[in-house]
Image 1 (tube, rainbow, N blue to C red):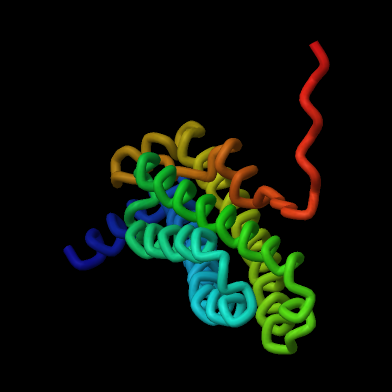
Image 2 (tube, helix red, strand yellow):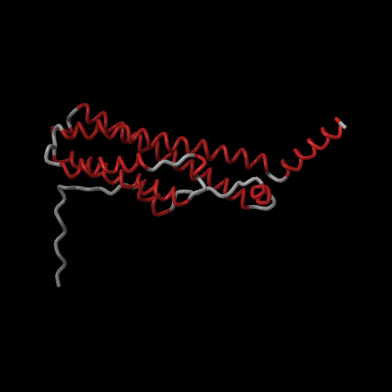
Length: 204
């Protein structure tokens, strides 16, 4: 009886391995790890915002609208959280991307404000924060690309036969990924140049 149980366990293990169960587990963990790094880097950026805003405020006292937009965008980011268990929810992923895109745009305008204040640009603290922000944006891009790759690999695997049968049996569905539109919005924040003259109206 004991030997039969061992044989059944070994047989089940072989069947699961042959149907991709172990690979699904591995790829699922890879997606979760990649997402954790994405969240960490976005949080790192959000943590820089208060000090950055306060530093700019010290020189650009008349830019209240810009400061308000940054504060609102940072607050929106804090309200949209996605855990590893939520990665199958495309709607939540879109909300997350939209909030991060708004913060990217607000920070882009905040940094553009510095162009109007030479003393601010020369401030050592501002330069340090600016360097930290740039470094964080680079880390976000790397983490985001790794996540995209991990999700693509996972989704392709769980959709393929015969592991798609195993995935359905154990409740492993596809993961949501960054969309093309929001990917561009996040990775390429709009540039705002207050010193650039407005374009001349087109001639009739």
